[in-house]
Length: 440
Length: 91
Image (cartoon, rainbow over all chains, first blue to last red; front, top):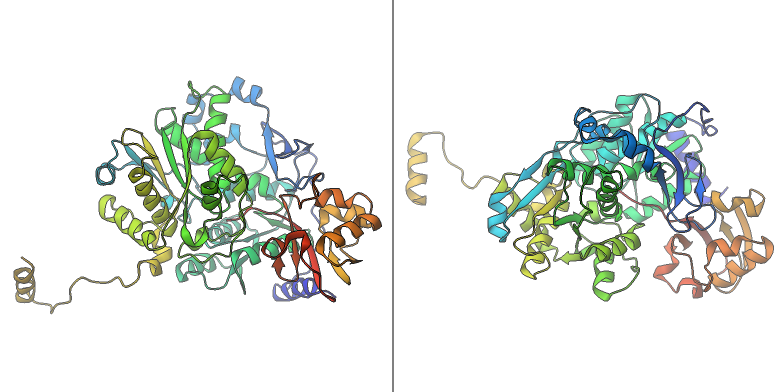
């Protein structure tokens, strides 16, 4: 028995369940306008199924659509009449003819941020704030699509490797849809993220090692657990499509146009590539009158910045790193979509930019102080990166800019260091007066 | 050096369904070449036309990604475990 077999058996015993065979895919499935999976590298097409890697070149598979059919049927009015969730864009998603696993992901606010804009020296800044999603991060978008696909394929177990936000999103969607969940996280995650995943009652397994180690374990387990839907492994082509709805929403909320610049935090790089894809698809199907002109900028913190470093060096691809960053949700040292993120930012005239670790908390505090929004570390990276881009002239004052604030700060309070009351006094009026006297 | 190589689901068609095979070689590159001799067609899936490791293929020597070592030139010690794993995105 190999080490991995032992691990797999250990997990089975812990879960009191035995690995079953892969579910049989119902032959009555209809995926709406999604027509196949295609390899991003070699273009080889395969039917819609739980598979994430091209059989021929190992390239990642993506859902492809019948854009002519979408263009003929979708409209701005049809979308506006849809639900206030990502499923308003069902015409542009892998949307099977089963009940969707939908707990309300998406349609987050696009917030006008004049005070932060003034502080940074921008004429117009919008914040796409994802903290209002059901589990308080953008990961609900990907999970609602992934588990809907998993349900359509007949899976009963939802699993994932996570840096924290995905863990909560998978556990919550699984709970609400009656699926079992098995979530793998690296040890040492922020207490808020662990609690926000554990509360839903699924299995939460801390693994000794980094996120990259956890991801590797899940990639191997995926070949052994035929009845599990690993949202970011075997149903990843569906999962990742959820992210492009951020691009759709930004465009719709701006009155069906794309902004001049977008700042996006980079972990695996998938979100960045999908926002670009989202803008492009809207134009392809006629929902945007003008071709998108948005400069897309990626944001990383120094302690895990393989994509930013490759961008600086002019390299086509990145070199993996061992992460050591306060921004744990971005701590992916071997980002699977890093290559595509580099290609996409260059194609749009954007950058991938890194900021010092100490700027992460400064970015979080700046956003809180100016706009009343408490973001997690990834949002701090985004705001600090925007500040740097403006300072260096890569984003100019007249560019209408959107910053993606992908999650809430309550999950990562450790990043702020010592925070607490600014004063402590006795419970009487005189004490307040003395304090105000002293601070006047 | 004879070592055990873990084969991902996507390549098991070349190994008659085996999830692990034995192979020998001084370096990871030698191992991959040896795998190709025993299981024709498998090498082309792991390395590209220039002989470099494909972008979306990760090879681990025990617990370490060979990209942190010497890539295909990494020496393979006796008794090591080698795993071939497709890259997957994160979250």
